[in-house]
Amino acid sequence: METPLAGLFGLLFVLLLLSAFFSGSETALMSLNRYQLRHKAKQGQRGARLAEHLLKRPDRLLGLILLGNNLVNFTAASLVGVIAYQIGGQPAAAAGTILLTLAVLIFAETAPKTLAAMHPEKFAFPAAMVYYPLLKVTYPIVWLTNVASNGVLYLLGVRNKGNDLHALTREELRTVVHEAGARISSRYRQMLLSILDLEKVTVDDVMVPHNEIIGLNLDDDDAEIQKMIAESQHTRLPVFRDDIDNIVGVLHLRHLANVTSAEFSKETLRKLLSEPYFVPEGTPLSIQLVQFQRHRERIAMVVDEYGDIQGIVTLEDILEEIVGEFTTDPSDDENDVVKDGTDTFLVDATANIRELNRSQGWALPTDGPKTLNGLIVELLETIPSSSTCLKISGYPIEIIESDDNRIRSVRVGQRIEVESNDD
Image (tube, rainbow, N blue to C red; front, top):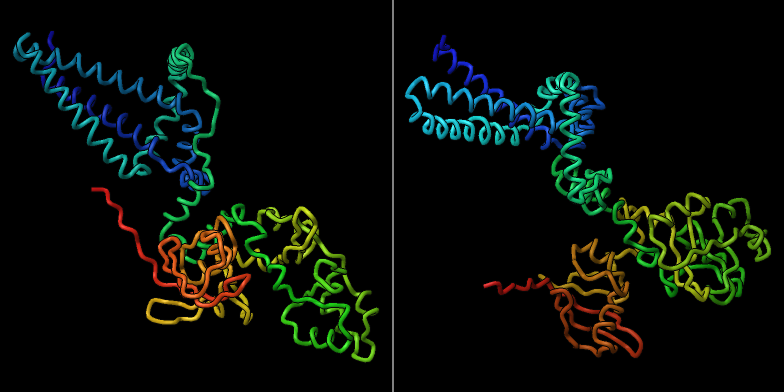
């Protein structure tokens, strides 16, 4: 007895719905953001927990989905043959195949996959609740299918090394933070990016250079030393003899709180000094931050391979790399830049390039010399005279003042973008 056409068409409709479910859920599950999924799973969402569990073994999940999808599609193809034969005999079979192909392509593949890609969570979480128990029921068949497919891949030289394909590199993480948009305020986003950049920045980039170190010289008389202490804007001062390279120790000014002017002497000062802490130049800030914490230090002398002091780096310098400037020291970089016109600035050539980039929003190269003077001299390979003009990274620069051993001040203009000739 032949089955009524209405029943066959109804069964075909159900098969197409099942095919759409398998196709759409596959796209939805594979399109999930794994970090958002992990967050929602930790919050206790059942669908998210099941989806995360299924995606730990994507080969089994795909095996289940493809098993169901192929079974449904092949059954639908056979059913269309039966329907076509009842309607028009063998000549109608070809037309039925074409119509089924179009129906599957539109209603069971393209439309559900597009919709699932646009709203993956809405489809993936309910689907996970279906697949989780279904996988347990069909596990033997899925396991055999996976063994066979993995065996074929093994013969082709493909090895599953168990790599975590979703671990982010530092640059990928930077992209994630950049694209967070309004979810993270611009200030916090910049702080996160600064933390990621700590390994790229070294103590050389943020240290106070040798010639700018302020300290106490034990060769000075007591009155001069006391004046330096009274006028100091720092809580810790290096103490040396004649030159900073002959450092004796570091003085924390709070240790002088109970010392009166009458009791003050160089001998008293020496007793209050702590041992200097030395670090090699080129140390990444990420490592130095940990070292400060480990050694319970807040100030370090940066030395080169010969042991000569190149500068001083403090814990505050590293923190400012993360959160930005939080002091109002008159020696800050705003005094290094003076607006000279609509689009030009007078700049102290000894200014640190990274600080100029940060405060002015410039993009001068930072992978070489640390100061603007060093950058210009390296480019020209000589100390230029006044009125010399050049361009660095699109910024027109004019030498305003220089002497025999360094450039003192320059005028920096607005950056000129270089147009590419791609035509």
